[in-house]
Length: 283
Image 1 (cartoon, rainbow, N blue to C red):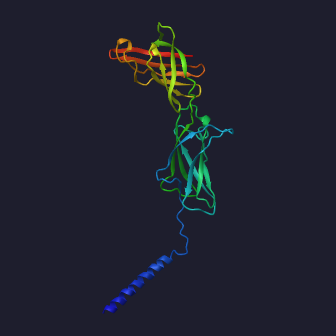
Image 2: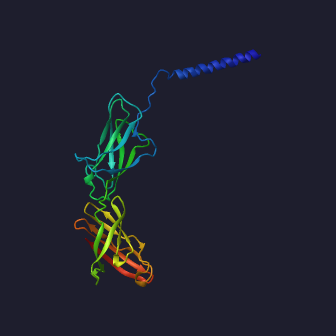
Image 3: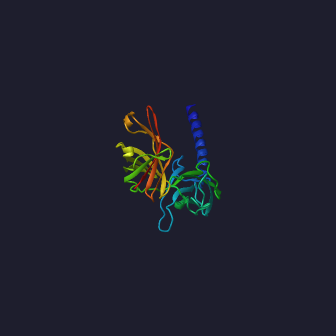
């Protein structure tokens, strides 16, 4: 009885093994080719965003491109074309950037680089930022379920001329558009820090006080821009009325030629406001 049971179990094992071997033999020696799909060929599942700071053009007038890898899940013995589309609320192909409507993945290759070339002169303002959506639209290869879009933020490289607004300036104050009954007076202007097109500045000697007043210069281009005065505590005892607080009033301006700038501001104390002023500074 025991022997019969052993023989029965052994026979069942052989039968299962033979079926398994038949299933394995179904793929042994044969090519298993994954279905072809095209997608953005970055590593991370969410790695489909980037920032392109367009560098200054070289001698030939071209800026270094931004590279986006486009890949397929298999290789082929023929060239295959991938079509692309671009959408932006502000950027235009041929004006702010240059990019192809299609790219070719050569035979035997799985990845090709899509080059987005920023047009440096297409950015009239150094504070301009464009958002561009790149979409794999179709072509010879079906698109993947995910990673078919790439979101690119574009802006031009900017290094402000930090030595332009430094030193001694002569200031004149205006109250509600009227020049004050005081002679022009000297102030000292210096830079605190710079971040892209924005320079953080200070003026010492405003209204004759040694307390520095901070303001910002935001460049629009190489020749001019705007100024603002962030809210700040200024003179601790302004004309005997106690601590003063200064905040911006309107927007001032600056120009490189002539080298001059204005700031608009309002000084207040606990008793009220000293009024709204525009101060003009020239070298």
